[in-house]
Length: 426
Image (tube, rainbow, N blue to C red):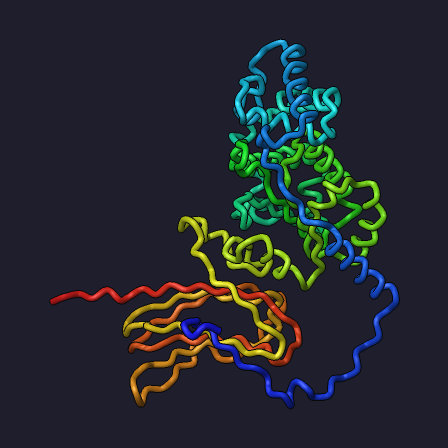
């Protein structure tokens, strides 16, 4: 560690590291096979590289296809004012090119197929009312906001991130309330499209800009049979009308059977599609998400620091990231706290399952260390800790995470703010 770093590391004692371990329970052959499958699907899929949408980067055949699509669209349109997301498709500008290239890529630059897809999409948007859906009132779905499908923050490259979690529908009463009949399903689909359109509203539609979103799908407790009709309709609707709008699809809390299914349908997917997939099994969620999204933008239920109330206070305060290796205890020392000042902090370790404590150490000789939070075991599923302390004298705050009982490396993050006391002059 750098001498100026507030983080210090204590290694576990050698005798502890070499202490005899209990014999591991034998795993079934199926479990071992599935685990290897999951690792294979994660490691062997190359990372997706988003297109820049600069026409100068196109191959000659792709440039020709783009021009042909423009010509055919011009010839087939009854009006020259067809548009998507407020962008005239025949305006001849670079924003229109970005949209047209999305349809071309979705159909491997086959012009006739791309035109057919584009015209069907234009017709659907008009019939569905997609251009005005952001103005729609979906107050009946308020309980689903921030739970089932919601936009939350950005990834490290600036893509808006959409989270999806359908585990709440294992509750039969909830399922019936939302999907009980065809009319309810239609309303849900309209609400779900509104959520997606919120994300698309943040895109640049500009060469070299941010032109797609990130999808994070939580498969934990997802009722497969009950949601088959709804999920198929959502998938079909998005594939047909929102081509190349997703830069990366991250599946988290993936059950063992998902990887078996993936290995079965994987041969039928294009390499381009497969390169967008990231698969994270349960217990590996935070470590996976941290690779793509900063912790202050990750919801607390997934090992991040983002809470719904944070949005009321403007952009999230950046967090400092660190790792806790197996057999280590990490101390974070926040110095320079004046008497009367209040320090507020957030701290999280992905998949906790370790001991945490916080103490205030006064600078003055003869002063006693104050146990702000006594050492306690943090469960694996606990969310980020948020706390504050007002000091009566100057000193430092020490946050400790003790991972000496584990061999597993864990990702972690913390942030803090110190507010000085307001002094009133006589």
